[in-house]
Each structure stands twice: as structure tokens, then as C-alpha cells.
Image (tube, rainbow, N blue to C red; front, side, top):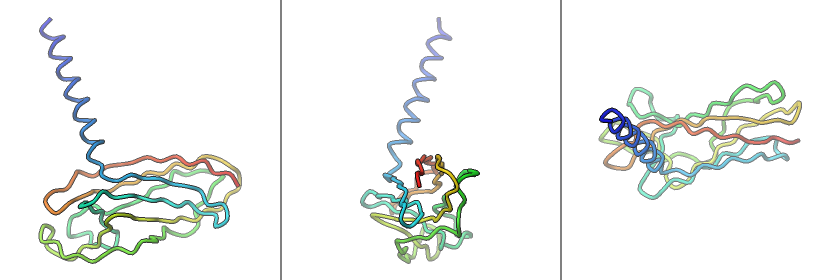
Length: 149
């Protein structure tokens, strides 16, 4: 009986920890297919006082910058590289000991594609979000978009 109680306590702690991590995301993501431009637009709404790090930030400083990984799909081919539509803001960060480039409030990204056949595009956003006193460990956010040309 004691092992059963321990198991349920352990499972409850894991569940609460998982819910807490999701609650600490601080960014609401959306993605849509723009048929006219042949591109995916990704938009992140960042909660007040929080910020994301741009790939423009020196990787030797330490923060995990926003990255987007697209799953390969034979019918959907990526053209070029990501275009960050929202320019990052330069900010001297004493915690990392240098100049970092951040987004606050909103970030928009565009990626062009050549569509051979309609399908599903899967992508994963990876980033670390911080405020002035703390950072949340890096998080992966998967997104699936239906592409119809």
C-alpha cells in the first residue's frame, strides 16, 4: 500500500511540474500560411516584462536564441532562410555580461516555401524567455500548419 501511495505522489508531482512549465511559457504562438506570398508567417505575442533573444545575439554570451526547425516534407520545400520581420532591440544585459538583442511584446517571422503538393508542415520553435530577474529553461513548442495551394 505504501508503494501505491508513493507512486501516486510521484505522478502528481510530475503532473504539477509539467503544468507549471507550460504556464511559464509567457509567449502565445500562432502560424498561418500566406498563399499569395507562398510563405508561413509565425507570430509570437510576448507577455509584458518578458523578452526573447534574437539570433543576432552573440552565442558566446549564453542566452538561448529563438530558432525555428522545419520538419522535412517531400511536397513542401523551404526557399531561403528565415526572415525576422520584427527588428530586435539592442540591450546591454548585466546578467550575460554584454550586448544582447531581444524582442519584447511581439515577434514576427516569415519563411518562404515552394509547394509541390498540399500537405502538413510541422515546425518546432526553441527558445528561452527571460525577464529582468530570471530566465525559464529552454522550451520547444511544436506547431502544425495545413498547406493548401
